[in-house]
Length: 78
Image (cartoon, helix red, strand yellow):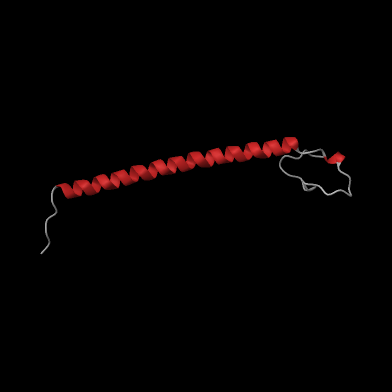
């Protein structure tokens, strides 16, 4: 024999589901915002490194360099 659910129980379950769905959407929105912020910070860092990078003409062929000779996105076409 199956017992009947009290009147308030389905409403309570629906409210719990709605609350969980709203919380999940807020977490996803925060994650998207954080991903955008991290991408911006990474781009600013790369730009700063590119600006501070010494010109290639000041390094002799016998000297070790911090940045290799492989061109990157920020290198000028030579």
